[in-house]
Image (cartoon, rainbow, N blue to C red; front, side, top):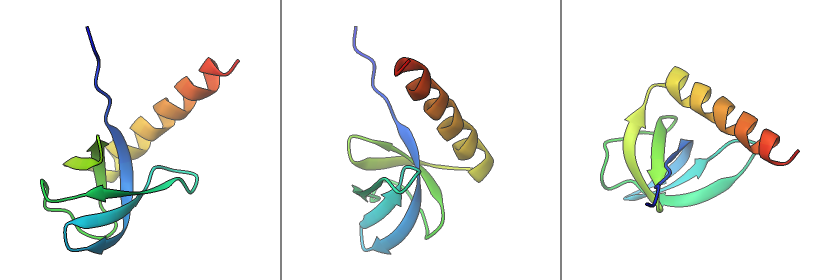
Length: 76
């Protein structure tokens, strides 16, 4: 069984169907936003280089906090 992960990120810049997003702590990546109607400053759920859903800020920040805790615990 395989599990696919999608991570929340904030849109920092938009240019056509491409966006630069911040996954937190300055981790920036370019993603394709053609599957969603997102605007600058929105949080999106990113999977395999594509934004697949627009998220509420509160939900995105909670999820990012959980990811941070998981990654911190894994490193111990």
